[in-house]
Image (cartoon, rainbow, N blue to C red; front, side, top):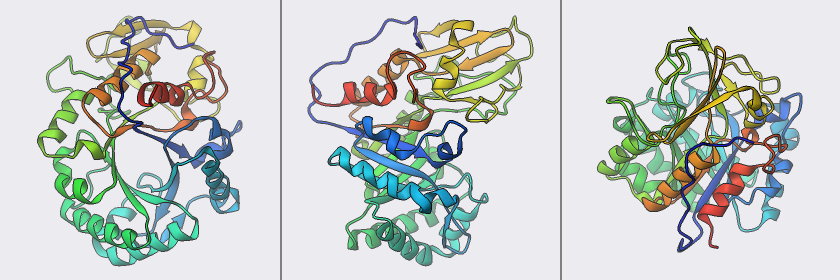
Length: 361
């Protein structure tokens, strides 16, 4: 079980309405040696589910990245409708489809892309689409025009539109246009430093403790000052761990020198990344350190250094979203949560925790 050493902050039980709990599914999880499929998510009780793993070409065509999607992935995902009144989105990703394809399509093939998106979401029966713009390699005016056109086209077929944004890149977006035309803005406020940086860093500090270091609070303040509509914004949290190898095991505080990302997990096989269930299987070998001011926790063993959210740090973020009047929260992604109860608190604990905080009692 991942435990924090900070005091748990209890939520007020007077939430006036159920808020958004947006849950992503990464289709790469279907290819793991121990896979997670959409059907495994039926116990999670989210309000929205987002299928992550569909790309585009630079010419504005939809690009299926895995044969699994059309063979059974989309169909299994649609069965989540049995959970009740939920919304199913598909994410047009920008980090696995050839680099700048989405950027180029928005800039020069926007009308074609708009039409192909509308055809795609109808063909596969999604309620809406999410445009992944967690990069800064685009013209914000072109994005604003594209979002406006796409919103109009989707409105004609009763479909919805979300946009993913990187929290620290406030100036990269036309925030007024996003607030007007997107149904949801999913605010990815974590990994403020590159995994390849030469120092270890907290995964998602709630508050800044060092000048010039971004946090959830500092980045949200910038977006609010720029006029974002709070009732469109979902705070995205991550269940997984970021891992590093220390240069010197006796120098292990935040900001200490790193020799690079930690070893890949046995199932996810990505350097610098461990799913929650992968870390829980080795957690007892680590020492835990709380950053009570920043609202963070890290773990170390020898030269291995790990930053991951605990139930306490996540609870603080959920309370923060409520107190700031946000639309809700999002979890990126469910397949990196504790899918098999390795932590001993129940499968998909983060989704259940979000539901405990954000739903009516």
